[in-house]
Amino acid sequence: MLWSLIKIIAFVAIVAGLTFGSIYLLESDGGVMVTVAGVEYSLGPFHTALALIALVAAVWLVIKALGLLVATLKFLNGDETAISRYFDRNREKKGYQALADSVTALASGEGRTAMEKARLAEKKLHKPELTNLIVAQAAEMSGDTRKAEETYKKLLADERTRFVGIRGLMKQKLDAGNTEVALKLAENAFAIKPRHVEVQDTLLRLQTETKDWKGARSTLNAKLRHGTLPRDVHRRRDAVLALSEAKDLIAEDASIETQEQAIEANRLSPDLIPAAVMAARGYVGKGKPRNATRLIKKAWDTQPHPDLAAAFAEIAPDETPEARIKRFKTLTKNTASHAESKMLMAELYIAAEDFPEARRALGDLVETDATQRSLTIMAAIERGEGSNDAVVKGYLAKALSSPRGSQWVCDTCHNIHAEWAPTCDNCHSFDTLSWTAPPETEGLSETGAAMLPLIIGALEDHSEAETEDAGEVDVVEGEASEAPDEDSAEERKSA
Image (cartoon, rainbow, N blue to C red; front, side, top):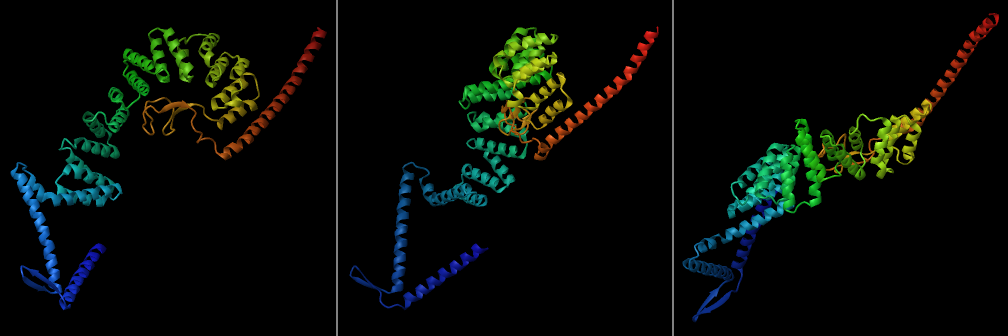
């Protein structure tokens, strides 16, 4: 509305200025004397201005006529589009200017302006392969998803813009949460341009989310083949996919194929703990305990883990606690200073009821790296050695405010998982779970931490009271037991 008012005011001002100038020239004295072929022409100021305008127009017409003559000569010389290009030159100039304006508006975030300029460029240029893409992106920026989808579908008709249309539709379906259609579009886009990194990553992510492990391995191999993935990263992720495929086969009771997949995953990445565990269990199922032992030891030396210890125990499930301790010492000898090795050996000694040795195995872990698990083990040791309830409950209370220790944590979003998975349940990132200590953001509140000393003190007071009561009961029972002893002595004397 304001812009229309400004244009009307400007038009009135221009008309008024031209009228005032014309009146001024008509009322002015003097003029111009022109002599042509001995004939003199006397022109007033107004007629002189008209003559100058006519001269400029004539020069412009001569230039245009010469251009048309040149185009005609080119046409006669065999250039069939010379004359059409001559007449379309001005229109194309305006069209390209509108196209440039639309690109500028799109880059500056002005979606509506970009759409208007793109429509003008389409009218002037008649090149939808250029303007439709800008219209689609401008519509997305403006929130008009319906217009964007219609425009992307138009791009599918041209082979030159087919990939752009498929990619645009794929991103729209991803934003809408329609992963099934997005997966099919990603497969089509990958077939057209297998080297496109974004399409590769999107397809791989969708395949892992839908548990299409074979398709994901094929995509991963394509990333390696086209040089968009380092070889060591490819081996690790290929092992993760092979392991994921094996885990799915477990649910289908395909035991032989599962064992082969698990062994392959472990071969590709020996430090992948779940692969080592599954492969070891596969060897145990085949009656090859030595292979399972060698595999678990190799994985344990790389990264001690409770799942590896559990799989190592399954190799000889019926052994005595003493034999188990002896066998596990061969597993932990290279990592004796690791916290996991200390806690594992302490637990084995507790199972064998050798509590002093369990304390020595745990060492100073409670002071240097206190976690919920190490403090719970210490409480069990104190209980086994006969310590009073206050000491045991004190360690258990302290465990409430201590770190949880290493967990499966996503490197991207730091979400904690109860067990390993190929993709994060929270952010859906692939191969981002690491066995590490999570950031302690969910510990006890300051009030709870402040109350712990009071709770422990109450436990100690209660324990002391129980001890005193027990002592009094023992005294009473002792006095009561002395009387029968005296009566029995007198009876023996009389007898």
